[in-house]
Length: 581
Ligand SMILES: Cc1cc2nc3c(=O)[nH]c(=O)nc-3n(C[C@H](O)[C@H](O)[C@H](O)COP(=O)(O)OP(=O)(O)OC[C@H]3O[C@@H](n4cnc5c(N)ncnc54)[C@H](O)[C@@H]3O)c2cc1C
Image (cartoon, rainbow, N blue to C red):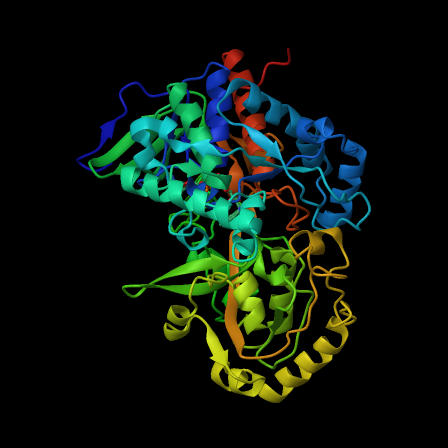
């Protein structure tokens, strides 16, 4: 300890490191079960990546789907996950997830401020046996963030690149549809004017949007629930070291602006620091394209530097790099934001739209662009293996970019010129000129577009089968017939946008038991637990559907907290065996 170190006077029953969905779902469940809980958060804001996210949870068998008459069974979901995870299928963990997921959702909706709405998302591989076309994903209900009172200032704002002057779009995509249609439909134009008007008023009054949606709403709802239960969320407080005695974890030493703080926890420490998206050393070990010297840009907050994994290792735990895909891949572009700053734009919606294709530097397409971000990312890494960079260029014609936008570039009437000037977009009158400016093989690009357009005019993509699954079509344009994902690139002028590899969070992580105990040589380390992306994903490095990180994260947060509370009720201190009653 340093000379400025002090103790958190009262200590606590349970200390949670990190204030995303993993940390807060654990903290709330434990508090409801009677434990005295403290949450510490390294950053000045609470919410972590969760506050940047779409706020979608994949929970097969959720009551929202049942209420809408969706027919699904636990057995089908289990079959789907078995097919998806292959060799990495963890039967005990998957069964716990499928059994407890709906209970977890009901618990939060019944007992806290956290509420959800149904979505129309298909599974990402609905044609795989056990997959469904609708019903397994729910999304956090929008929230009036003013309910946080003074703590609104500590809520992590949404990811800047996916807002429009700070305004959030709704994850259900209803909002986006109106914004895309605003120049063609009076109803949409009025909707957009109303949304913008009320947002501008909020900016004047609160200096941020307060009608929040998606993951920002989820983070706000979780934080409000925790704060209402009297759980302190100590922001600006970064866990630095574990306090251990005789092989038992009894608390942490945390760094604050006022010096080090020693926090003891009678029933354990839960690591919930959000994975290793910004741990450079771990990325070189885990990501093949980074090991080869390639670029990787993550929209995950910069504070997610793998601290939980490193703390676990000091106690004998292990971060295992073993999944074929160590992270949830997300193709991203770098957005110049002025003042020499740049932002990261996750390509969540444009790749699905008709008239937009993705090519490598050699001018060739390499995959079905309307597959999920994770699948396109995996294909991009495979296609670029052995080359110095992992990158693709999204290509489209003028009519398409004005209709749908491209990456950070918004549809008409928002002007494109600033983004051409600052180099975000490359423009060319012809494909040859575009290719020369973007550094792509021009002759091959012309051949690729010619071949693609020939079939696209009939809505076909014989090469990669775009638009052949319900998921492909979900984010296409339903007005484009016969195939919502396929139309010719068409006439110039043309635009190109460079896209590189990024992630939404890490899949590999700390090895734990099903209930979240950190393991050392196969046995639990007394008093040490991991949840959220600190813990290895139950999906085995796959991305089966919308919300497959947050669904398991909140479920296992609930499971871990109940396990700890059960131990505590048996009055066992850390390190004592569980009672058999
Ligand atoms: C743009 C985007 C969209 C996404 N959409 C979805 C979606 O809709 N559905 C889905 O399932 N997933 C989605 N994801 C992924 C999802 O957001 C993450 O998997 C999830 O939020 C991780 O939760 P977590 O609690 O593990 O970590 P986080 O939410 O990142 O929280 C971890 C917290 O720990 C803090 N911390 C780090 N180190 C320390 C330390 N030493 N001491 C104290 N605190 C520390 C961090 O500052 C952070 O606040 C998305 C991600 C992004 C970037």
